[in-house]
Structure formats: structure tokens, C-alpha cells
Amino acid sequence: MLVPLALAFLGLAAHPSAAAPRLGAPVLTVTNLRHNLVGIWEVRGATPNRNVAFFVSLSGPGPSALDVGACVGANFSLSPQLRLLGTDRSDASGTALVTFAIPINAGGRSVWSQAIDLGDCQVSNMVFGVVG
Image 1 (cartoon, one colour):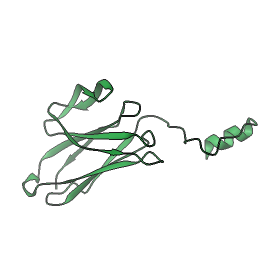
Image 2: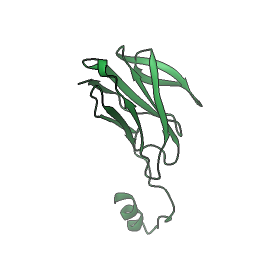
Image 3: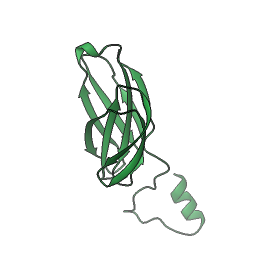
Image 4: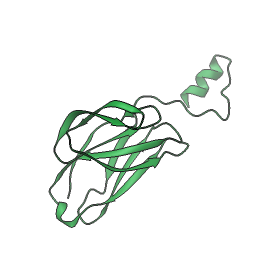
């Protein structure tokens, strides 16, 4: 791991209970985007032990600004109408996920997805997919 190694090189020690530092925005992946199945929206790199909100748009890429909890004017790469899929509390490693039952008649629909880390108001990458 680079950070503890760099600290050791500088003659410093990392506190064993300190959380790993975050580098950049959380990263969203979407898997199992198929009609009549359960899709999985997962974020890695979120603030540990904080809520993450997952959104989708069926109308295209953004931009749009949205107030989500304490995150006022968060800039999303999604077009309105944004739909909240759900929220999940990230684990100690900063991973959170939600699942969603994709309707049987959703095949062929375009879906744009994004998440926001409610711990520090960082917005994830935008993920585009077509329901199979």
C-alpha cells in the first residue's frame, strides 16, 4: 500500500484505526441490467460508514443540479426527472450498493445512473446502459 509505505519512508507511522484516505470521487458500476432480473448498483470509494444515494434517469445525460440531504446544488450528469433507486450506508471500506428489480417490459430502455456520497457530497461517475 502506497500511503503507509510513504509514511514509513518519512519516519511517520499511520494510526492503526485511521481510515484509508480517499482518492477522488466514488466509482459507480452497474451490473445485471437485464429485464426481469435484479440489477446491482455499486459504489466503491465512498466515505466509510456514510450514506450513499443512487439515482437513475430515463431521459438522458445532464447536467442538472439537485439538493440531496445536506448536499445543496449537487451537480449530476443526468437529465431530470431523476429517480432515487435507494440509499445504502457504505461499509468500512467505502462500498455501498442497492438492488432494483428491473421490470419485464424494460428491455431496450436506456438508463443513465449516478450516485452521491452523502458524507462529503462527491458525485460518482455517470454510467450509461441499455436494459437487455
